[in-house]
Image 1 (cartoon, one colour):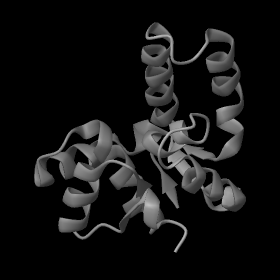
Image 2 (cartoon, one colour):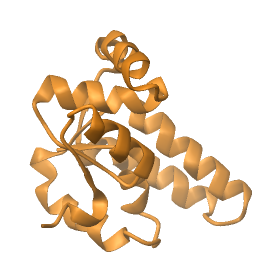
Image 3 (tube, rainbow, N blue to C red):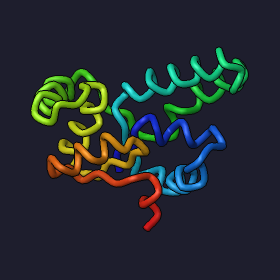
Image 4 (spheres, rainbow, N blue to C red):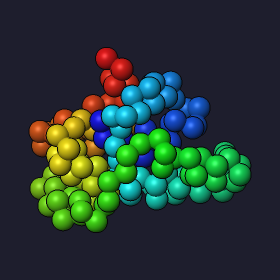
Length: 135
């Protein structure tokens, strides 16, 4: 399974979908993401820290352990494919990096991003909502 940042953040933030996201960690050997996920998660934590929703030491600790929770694929190898997908489905390249990895690996993308689910599914990618990942 390819995991996007919306899922990885929920591993550590007790928000809606937290339990479903945590359940995916039981399948740790089968989880993959582009290394771009690290930047996206760090950006979310930066925003949350600025709003007082997460403290800085916790955010830094999470960012240190996150790379060990899944296999990371180099974004550079996916960027051309992601750009083509973005053009085809009219969706941001940043999200299409996950779709490119999904295609490359013959995998299913798990996300909590409803727009990505809609566009990815319409373009015949294997994409499921976080809520459906335990079924």
